[in-house]
Length: 257
Ligand SMILES: [Zn+2]
Picture: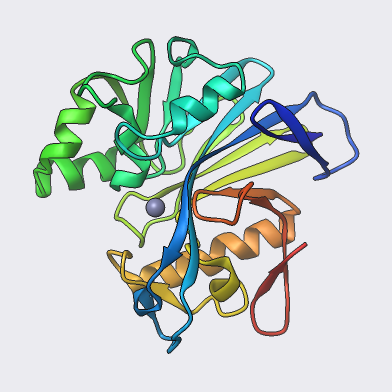
C-alpha cells in the first residue's frame, strides 16, 4: 500500500496493487503555490494564468528514508518536514531529479550552510557534468560543495528497489525515480509535467524551462505511458498539491484519476 501524508496527517491510501509488500509512505512537502504566465507554454496559445506550485517529497521505504528534491534555497521544505516530525538532522539521503534552483536550492539554508547537515546527495552524472563542468553554474557548485555527492548513471539501481530512469529533455540529466516494492510502484517524476491541466490532455505542449523541448515531449509521453500501463502512482514536483496522482490514457492524451 502507498500512503500519502501532508504535515504528518494521512491524506489517502492508494492502490497500485492488492499484494502486500510493506508500505511506502509519501509525505508531500509544499514549497510554494502561485500563478504562472501562460507564455511559458510552447505549442499552445492561452491567455489564462496557470496554476503553479513547487513540491518535494519525503518517502519512507521499509529500509530507508529519502528526500526527493529540496525546493528553493532557504525555503519552506525544512518547515514542511518539521510539521511531519522530521528534523533537518534526520535527513540522511537526498535524491535529486535535476539541478534547477527549485529542486536543488533547498540544499542551502538562509545562512548559506547545508540545510541537511547529515545528508548525502545522489544525482545523475550527466546532470552534474552539465551544470558543473559545462555551464560552471556557481549556485550549483556552491550547493554541491556542502555535501558528499554520489553520482549515478541512467539505469542504475541507486538503492534496492529505487531505479534511476533516463528522463532527459527537460534537462540533460533529468531523472525519474522508479520505486518498486513488491507489486507497488511509485514514480518520482520530477519535471515531466509542469502544468497538468494543460499537459495531461495535451502532452505535446512543452514549456520554456525545457532545455530540449522536443526531447522533453517524447520523454513526457514515454513516462506517462509507463505510468498508465503499470498502474504506478506518480509524484511530481509541479503537480497540484498533494502532487500525487495516477494517470490513464485517453483518446488524445492522459487524465488523472
Ligand atoms: Zn521544476
